[in-house]
Image: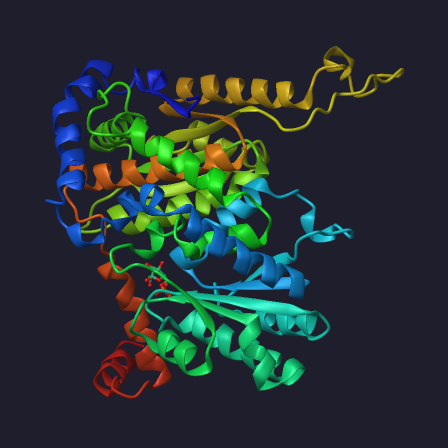
Amino acid sequence: MQKISIDIQKTGGFISLDEVKKQAGNVLACQQKLHDKSGAGNDFLGWMELPEAITSEELKTIKATADRLSEQSDVVVVTGIGGSYLGARAVIDALSNSFDFLMADRKRPVVLYAGQNIGEDYSHELLELLKDKSFSVVVISKSGTTTEPAIAFRLLKELLEKKHGANEVKNRIVAITDESKGALRTLADREGYQTYVIPDDVGGRFSVLTPVGLLPIAVAGFDIEKLVEGARDMVKATAPDVSFEDNPAAVYAAARNLLYQSGKKTEILVNYHPKLHFLAEWWKQLYGESEGKENKGIFPAAVDFTTDLHSMGQWIQEGERTIFETVISVENSNHTVKVPSDKDDLDSLNYIAGKRVDEVNKMAELGTLVAHVDGGVPNIRISVPQLNEYFLGQLIFFFEKACGISGYVLGVNPFDQPGVEAYKKNMFALLGKPGFEKETEEIRKKL
Ligand SMILES: O=P(O)(O)OC[C@H]1O[C@](O)(CO)[C@@H](O)[C@@H]1O
């Protein structure tokens, strides 16, 4: 099996590589807690079994729904926030043509996103655009009560009803939510929407390999079987019988925790392909919500290189030395473009004429690696052979598994997110939500 791999050699000047190896016992014990279901948050470990549990029948059903939505729509609006949209967007963006939205001769609908913000202009512009389009909505909320997607869904449903009448609307909405509870489940059952279930034991940020991610990814025309196959192979590559050195999730969890203990408090996920921007957004939620608690946890940040070398490069090279980088390095591009020769050579680029653009990108990557390590920034490198469904499936499961292990190494429950409630409570109090009268009074005193 060809697989993604991890290289921690360039952390060696900052933490001892022997020390990383010495973590094997503790890290594998933390991994075992995931497998035994004996650690904190053990009722949210369903994601561990997803790749192997999902059947080809289930995948076929998801594909059939995706094809139906695709046939009837120019646009499919994926409506959700956090774990209820980031995984889908990460994979769709990573696999799509960068100029997909301008492609005239399309086989699949354009996938747009709603409910991931409360920007009024965003809402207005989306609704204006959709007025003249044939569109469907995939509304995703595990709790079924999250404010942002609930507002967006109200607006989209109202527009669908105006355009098509209440009867047709139910063919244009698919709801992905809890099996039995929450406002979205109640509405979906009442209106007769097609639904998919987010299992109780799978938290939002670990749900990309459920219909939450798989349906939108299939709508966009990508191969969800290959995605799951990649994840399945990563389940094997990180299984309890694999040695510490051969288990990339264990090595990643060990190295990043040692770096954290040595004072490197921020991890910057680096990519050299703009298509991976949203993979980093997905990763930020995964690690941020899982580890940032009890006043500890690595701060997960991200940059797109070489773009951000011209904005954040200065800080990374010479700013406060509390950071380390984890680079997602894609070994092979999917297309070939060569730098042309120019007879005048005014830009002095002829020395690279004939070279592939990817070779230039790779040298930028290598040059940056050496510069940043020299500048005091440890570097972890995750090699991905190619950007396709199979390796993205591997990468997703790799990061999820490492996250579970890493949270236990840090000593927190990686599967809850109590801190997210604070802003919600204040927002409800400020909006005057019934039942929040006491909070309204309290917060007003603080303003
Ligand atoms: O799917 P839901 O319940 O709408 O939640 C969306 C997101 O909101 C959070 O619960 C945080 O409020 C995330 O953990 C989650 O991914």
